[in-house]
Image 1 (cartoon, rainbow, N blue to C red):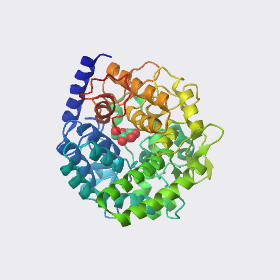
Image 2 (cartoon, protein in one colour):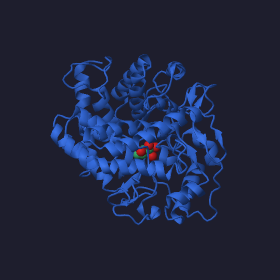
Image 3 (tube, rainbow, N blue to C red):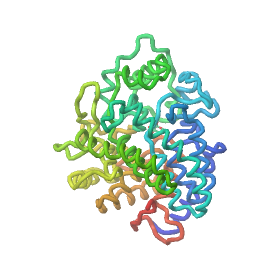
Length: 438
Ligand code: GLC
């Protein structure tokens, strides 16, 4: 790809973020996702940080303004209602102001904040923002460890596939199949299918179970202890756990910078516990991958998904995992497919069951690069660049043809371009490797 093309893509990426800006927060994609999503916003802030630092900090602060008193940060904030989305605020009925959902999402915030601080041109403003955000970040991490790991076993539990951010991943098939759809499930009409072809979205059977879980949590008044005790879906997600461990490391670094010694010691305990527990629970010697674990059935889940490679981001993952990644990237024309081609669960167009997700590539690519799996990391970045250059700022991509799928003008895809692919001022095309997240 030539530098001029890359330049115009930068302008187009900026235009996507500006068009999705609703004043203080960025919607993932107008129409399909008209509210503020938790991990989208944090990753989108990385994109804003490339051309408007104050707006980037504002994105994160707007998200944390919706933090619950117990520290939980919801997965969706409904700043204003939009009848075009289901399930909206009336279904969640959490009674919060601003209105929000009652579950969370992978905690990428602290890692994004650290990255934004390190690259900030206006360091003074960045440090002030970090000082404001630090207690809130700490409270969210403390909530995760307390509410989702009450026995201090070193891993956090997830109560709904939506919390993993990888909604219909084949890893959730078995635990979700065990969720019996509520006989009194309120009738509902999906709105996502008005925007995207049904073949690229989760199925009705999955939605009935997603909604059954939401109905249960609403009946439990979103009490965290009750949710963990009663949810028929209870898993250890390698993605969420790896992201949390990485975020704990980044939060500890922020604590050091701010001189928050007590907090740093507290975070150190979480890190040590996770380092001891995660490889033992999740790394599978046979597949050479990290897998999800089903806490209800007490077994590792055999499904193979790209989430297992997030171990790299956590500073874990060994040569065996790197070899698995090297093999996986070669199963498709464009890497990294969310499920390896050839796997029975592989579905090249259906959401988290095959397509390539730029945001997953960024997180896995960054981790792989840091852990020395450079060849695969370079491939992920180059393929991400080619997919976006060829297919636009789409939600996800067909790993065999490169076709763009799902929502269009997607916020975090634009942010991936700005923060990972584009190298402003360095005269580098996407074929050259350098890690802008460093
Ligand atoms: C879907 C994705 C989730 C994302 C949201 C908004 O639900 O699975 O990861 O946060 O859309 O983009």
